[in-house]
Amino acid sequence: MIRSRTVGALDLLALVAAGAGGGAMNALAGGGTMLTFPTLLLLGHPAVEANATSTVALLPGAAASLAGYRREVASHRAWLGTLLLPSVAGGSAGSLLLLATPDELFARLAPWLLLFATGLFLFQTLRARRLAGALAPPALPVRPWGAWLGQFGVALYGGYFGAGIGILMLVILGSLGLTDIHAMNGLKNFFGICINGVAAAIFLAGGAVEPVAAAWMLLGAVLGGYAGARFARAIGQTRARVAVILIGLVLAVVLFVQQAG
Image (cartoon, rainbow, N blue to C red; front, side, top):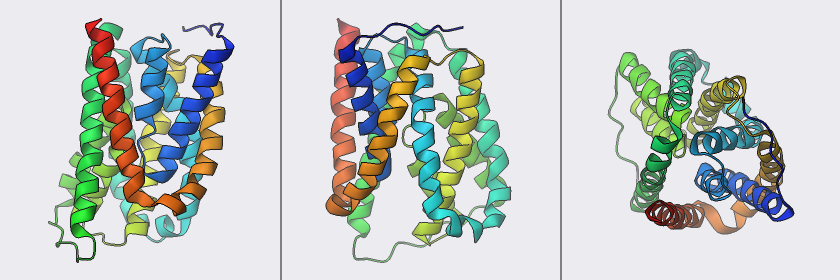
């Protein structure tokens, strides 16, 4: 079991700031993990502990964002039954896989996971710009079992690391023929809560969460999520995603340099 540790005032400030930034990023465009996880690493937390703590700290803000899409989710209940089980099963499997991963191995994987998530955000940003002002191409329909397997894979990755799962889920929902972006966002948020919720429960039960860091980061995430939702109207999704991409690249480079050192 992980015990809480004594942290200094500067560390607390960094935790709150990272939580606020992560909460704001999630409210703007997603990708809050790309800020909170590296911050915990740079503060000296072991890699697995840092990822588990980040997941727990960002969960309440993500859950609150679901309220804004409750009508859209309620109007597409059929998809809840189709993709709920693979979301929970994949999230559980991914979180258990993380707990079984040695810290040294996960620390080596961390920069590459950040680069992968950054690449997802870059792909989504370029795709959004290309489709701006034009009709989206028709989605390629898939059978329900194909969507089930795809969602399980996304949830497996989400339980293990998590940054960028929203983009992957939008791809799956689009392949099922959904075109209402608000409904897709609502379903994406619901399944994201399922994935991260079960992962957070497993991380807490497994003693992988550092409680002091999680509490202060959670406080920042709530404040940042509220402010970020208001700020989103001012700068728009595209600029928010560009900010996520730049932050992800910088932090990945920092982690690579830290490993080299």
